[in-house]
Length: 195
Image (cartoon, rainbow, N blue to C red; front, top):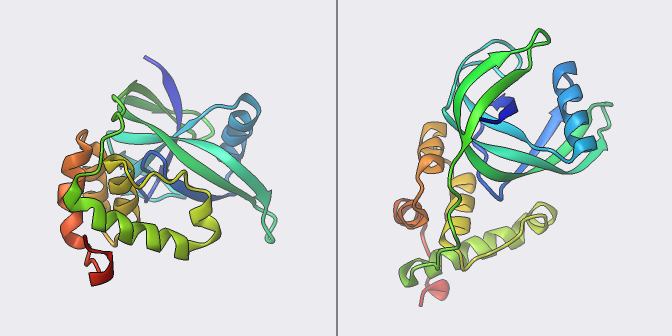
């Protein structure tokens, strides 16, 4: 089984989603330096007990790999990154290096093949499209696919004010149509965007 460097956070990253990071801890500077030079990925997992900058007592079993798509030096001198979610994985075991970096033995979860958006969910996708246009620069970094149920569901799960545990539950669902069935009722569709 492959081993992956882990970045435990109090956030859930979905495939295709964007994750801005400010890096200051040496263990993560080193990890991300290796990722940038080798073109690799690191795993983002939700912290279920503990803190981002302290001890992580427990983390979710399912996470998403992240790939760095842009970086810069922030005004405060820290490293700023923009990452994109790639593949889901299940964490089988984990260990911690002497420098505090978490490493996990993982198994890859099957990716969802593109799944056509059901007709009843098209108005929800139109609402999402409008929201993404209003996001401006950040929205332009997304690889938009408003016809794919999985892509639309993942963006809704990121953008809606959901509890982290609910987001994690959605990430763990394999069926994109089921994610859409759960999320669509949460969106109020304006009259002009309905079929």
